[in-house]
Length: 235
Image (cartoon, rainbow, N blue to C red; front, side, top):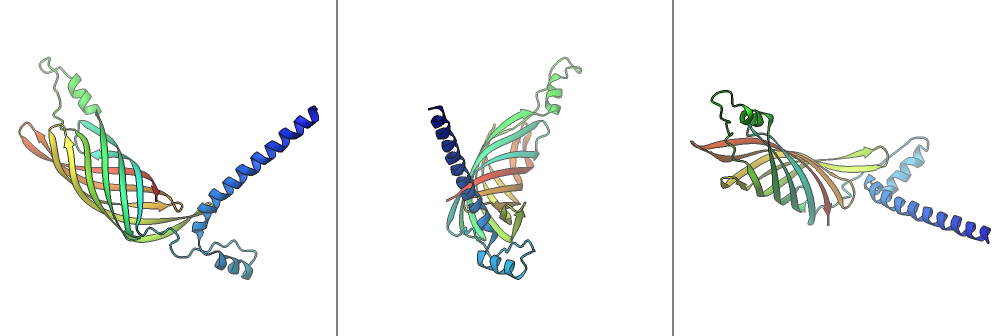
């Protein structure tokens, strides 16, 4: 009886392991099929069996008329000397062709004082009173973006597969809500997008962004640099 139970456990474990291996093989196959034309690969191997060969052909990830959803983490560099801003956002890209796409971006900001701002509040050495820094911090923003992908390439990732990438330019405009109220915002920059599989994408983006903030004595131009990381899914 004990031998029968032990045999059943061993058989069940082997079946489970085989199932996991099959699922892993399917995932790797989806990842590795971005490498290119299998027929040309076999012909190249036949010519020189001892060489390690990977043939990379034209685009395999077709982005024509496809939708891409991309959650994003953003960090603002520069801008207000007393305030540090980080944001969580969501992007929706519609790819007309592999070279052009239009997007909508929404982000919600989280703000905290920089060390300079904390020092200013804590310093009461002049007249015994704390100085409150003048900050018109961002709360949230919404923008319309246009992306152009002029440079295209492929990268072999540790022989696990080939990731396609595009170096792209982005311009856009929209509205940012500050503590003082909404104001117009505009942006321009670039990034690199990796198309890891038929559905998975990753973007690294760096943009200039400008808007006007209010001060006690009027408005001042805010010139910031925004860095973003996106991990997306393409339908």
